[in-house]
Image (cartoon, rainbow, N blue to C red; front, top):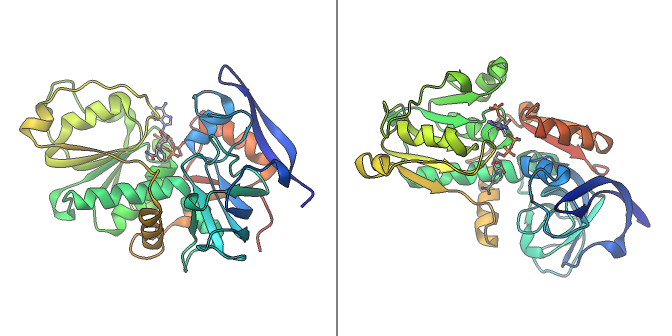
Length: 330
Ligand SMILES: NC(=O)c1ccc[n+]([C@@H]2O[C@H](COP(=O)([O-])OP(=O)(O)OC[C@H]3O[C@@H](n4cnc5c(N)ncnc54)[C@H](OP(=O)(O)O)[C@@H]3O)[C@@H](O)[C@H]2O)c1
């Protein structure tokens, strides 16, 4: 490992430049665990970071990639040994600390989780931060009382990474999933993941009054903005909405009426969790919350395809999880 390929985000918040370069091990950031990376993925946040369309990068230059999987080469942490299959995500990874678009990463041990038995590093990268967050949302929604008998669950931005895994998990748990998408031509894909019905985002009826006809017992919202406001107005009594993302915007307006008259619960979902939470959820992602359709959800691309995939994610032309083969698999 004299030098290795990396996709570096340079410049400043006002003028971001991204491209391939060669790095040496000495240029990696500090951390207890050195990982030989095999796969990384392209999340919405990665695409905003690499193009400068969102102020994501906190330290320039920074290797992009907020999640990756591979094999431990060396570790100063007792939690890991050489040869362990691991997944790295969240905290500063790919934001303020060199991330997953490289042959190697050196990271704090708290950002690393074991790939649990039953999953491969490719599976772990397919799940990545998006699938982890979907599982976290489903877990929080279950804790807040959702049950299949109480009615449909809406999942919007349905062809996206978070939503694809959320549809898979909710359908597996017996929920009637209504997938809402800007790409209704992808209905076959969404139904294969387990969606009971597919609605074009343009055809979703959410009205504009403080309370509209109650349609869903719960929702997984990747969009924020006006779509979230519409969901709040149309969620049934004691319903639960998991707010995960902002693909349609960060601001929304609402009244308190859905909260005080229907007891609607808006719960926030954040994937920057402590080690015990992460270890627990990753184990569940290999057992009771294991997505059934990882092969259908993932598209694996060579490292050289990364700039094109980033453009596709920004333009909303993607489906499921885009995994990049950043290093050789075992
Ligand atoms: N809270 C957390 O810890 C956490 C963790 C992971 C991700 N996130 C956030 O969750 C969101 C989804 O992430 P992801 O990785 O799943 O993204 P993704 O794979 O790019 O999917 C986003 C989906 O949203 C829809 N979409 C995209 N742009 C849109 C727009 N301008 N207006 C309306 N819909 C749009 C598209 O679905 P359709 O074409 O099917 O509608 C797209 O496939 C992002 O905002 C991300 O930052 C948050």
